[in-house]
Length: 279
Ligand code: FE
Ligand code: FE
Ligand code: ZN
Image 1 (cartoon, helix red, strand yellow):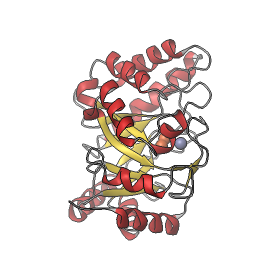
Image 2 (image 1 turned 180 degrees about the vertical axis):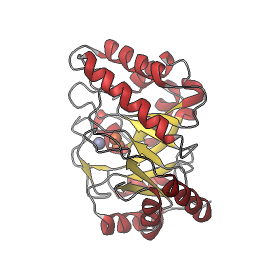
Image 3 (image 1 turned 90 degrees about the vertical axis):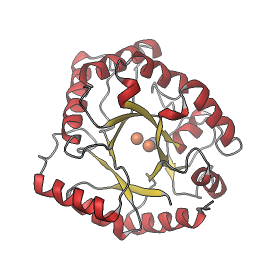
Image 4 (image 1 turned 90 degrees about the horizontal axis):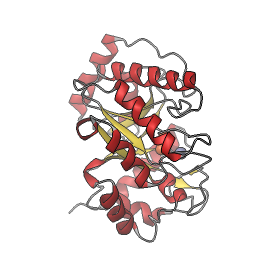
């Protein structure tokens, strides 16, 4: 049994995403909370939420992953940009409580020349301003490729953020993106065990809550962040077979973010399901 899904368009609502996921062999999915460029989110429709929750229960869907718009930057040099990130994250988390107990993932940010230390400080301050002890959503920091001045391409940077967030033990985790960690220099192709041992040493495997399944157009340490379809990049099919069957990963939800439309995702989910070895 694996939870495998892909990124879906959220324009038709939660129940529609659930039906779409089931129609392509998925038992979970990821979606953007709003336009990826960060505009205003659509109002939550209680009837849609109720229909989704019923469907998720009946079909046994796994935790779904909401993805923040990727343009928000909690460690911008500009205070107004940081404030916009704070308001957007807070609004998303408020909305997530309509679907209790799921996952919310965001890119930590780009320090734009301020340096990692300032970036980490500003990201943690943002989280400390918006997390509340009552929330049921787990907030995930995504591992990043290290493009430009991105924070989060070294496990140590994610550890630092978690350490500085007061409620992190209870409310926060990490989403490992296969393309991003490979681009960042973690060799999940030749040494998956070594990378996971390093993750455990620095962050702790108890923090690992989700996996983004993407092949990478560019090679190890390329810092490019260009996703490829599974088996069509430098990571390759065999590495994904090891990932989906790894004892510390197999119980996590896997989300594809490959360059595909629905038929391509359906084929890729079939490919991943065919790799699953039950023990
Ligand atoms: Fe992402
Ligand atoms: Fe990702
Ligand atoms: Zn990416």
